[in-house]
Length: 312
Image (cartoon, rainbow, N blue to C red; front, side, top):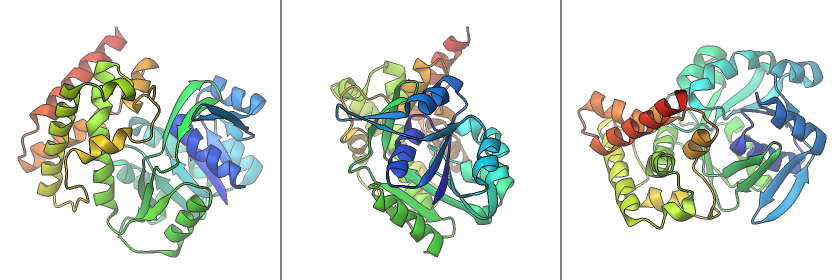
């Protein structure tokens, strides 16, 4: 299968590297020239449980090079930050053909609407993944994917041949993948995991190992998830999550002590975070349906303050 990872940062390289090892033609697209150059020259170094392995990958900063070299893709996996969705997919139309599938595995809510405006809703699959990755240097990542499930689905809940085929490709590569007939519920279930740890890791500056040693942090996480679950129910979402502590437990399961949530990784790079699409989405939906979200509002305010400090 010809696959493009649109947004080959930590998570994109983790998934792309594993799919490359499985024998697929995978293109890793990243705006960072140093990261791309390192992968081209030395391959992608993937560190798993302290053991390094290097994979020869195809890496580029632009999709036109992919179009020139290989034509249209069978699958485009979108993993750019939420606020870069439109800017990333518009130049990628040169590798979208009649049968290309576009799969968003991004954090948060609302990406499918943006993608649909560019490539058409009929090409879209939605999904969420619990695979973890972290860039440790240009062309080098740590990854955690064993036992970390991925869920994908058609927006209408159908069990199409294409979604089952992509799940089969992922599973054969070792990426445990399930087809969901309730993908919006699945998206909200993943959102709860991001609500539990993303902002708290960013605000405290703590990696997962230290974050999980603070009981007050856990209590705050569970409170934020409880609010989000109430908002989801009010908006008619069918959640699989029942226990508000479960997303907190799931977020850190199997990850290395030093692993950092994506929001903290963004702050470490001097970048803004996806707070508006995670805790901020909970607040926005809460206002829409009249559900109070004071804990999430506080987390958003704290993160916005930190982001403001990065600008000055």
